[in-house]
Image 1 (tube, rainbow, N blue to C red):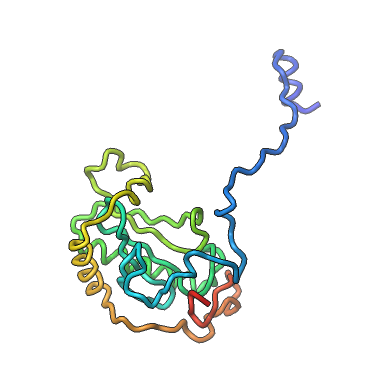
Image 2 (cartoon, rainbow, N blue to C red; image 1 turned 30 degrees about the vertical axis):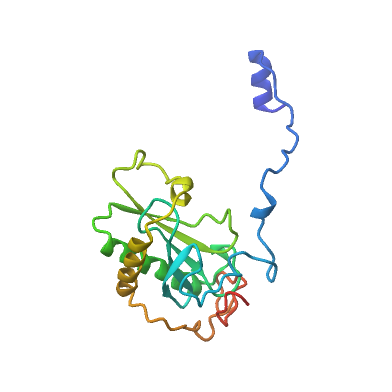
Amino acid sequence: MSPFELEAVVCGSQVPGPRPPAASTWPERYAEPAVGAACSMCEKDFTAPDIGWGLLLRRGVYGNAYLWRAGRVRGYVVVVWTGGHVARLTALSARQLAGFMAEVTSAGRAIEAHYRPVPKINVSLLENDIPHLHAHLIPRDPDEPTPERAPAFAHLEHDHQDEDGLQSDAAALRALLAYTGATHGVATGDGPCDDSVGGGSADPGGGAGS
């Protein structure tokens, strides 16, 4: 008898028996797709200046930065990994990780410079709803009812930004990011096996739709 069971008997409480394994409630659409399987993010045209929900701000080496069109938060930016299908941050090599996070940081600095003052930017890599690596950069408004909590995605997705204001913000952010419109290839040797850390399934050719 374990110490826990003995204490339960002495105290007259009932020792809980083994619990049956709980059935998974994780939706099938959240499951990580295999390389080459259908991915809603990989299907996007990352050469286009507008992919529907986002306006292209910068086409980077490792990811594209987009200004979010929907929602109520001005300056909401998403940086999407474009080096082939990768579902998790932990799948990247050390060099890929450093490059992708540098581009996320550059987007954050552009947001801070354009939307002054910005008290805080939340950076989220949730890997839940769309199993393709992407980072959310969310400016926080000090007038929010619960600024100490994570922003609700309903607040980020409901309604739409004013299109004229969105286009103006996008132009300013592109200038801050020194947007050139050129497609950059991933550095030679920066494939999934280029170092001992990470790896992943990134295509060293850099094509998100490949």
